[in-house]
Image (cartoon, rainbow, N blue to C red; front, side, top):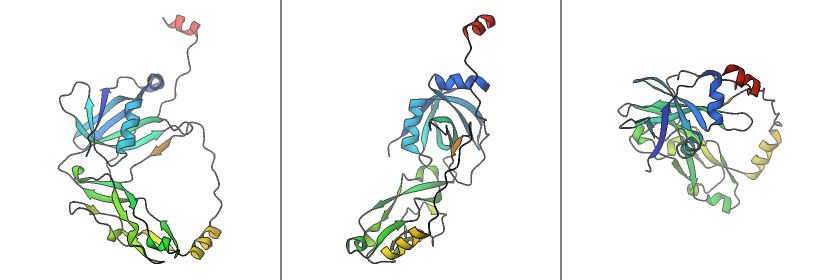
Length: 241
């Protein structure tokens, strides 16, 4: 599996000045974990975006801080986004202990074609897009495959307990929970008629969207999102020199 690396620097900018940090292309972050004191960091926005796309919240990231001679193995935890632009405002990085098991959500990848669809017996409806597992950090997989080719008739389903994973991985999600099922067309139409219209909620200015890895983790020391200070006028800059 490809190793994902991220370089970071110790951060000395806090408070309102963090707004200027973001404008310069650096994103504030914090590193925490059971064996490390919280460390405030800053990472290049472009590099962070690439790493989050590759790793999500379930793949290990080798974090190099300043001029360290070895990386720290981490997982991205909470990723705070701007509600309007969806750009990253802040990220929490959790330093794992490679000899201690952790809980994480692993995405599901659906492969194969369901014969039931070809026979027009129904349509495939997916109920889950990830499951929760418990394992050592280096046993975390990128995805877990779900083979839909075994679905031949309507009302057939694949349950969490039917999924195949390594013996090193313990699945925590209820084994009786449905992952994917073939529903007859009439049943799908009935469900669509029962669906309530979606009401869009207004987002309050300054509200921060948080993508959180839902797991039994260790609370990270939450850093507030600091408001950007207003731009200084020429007269103000001269006065403060």
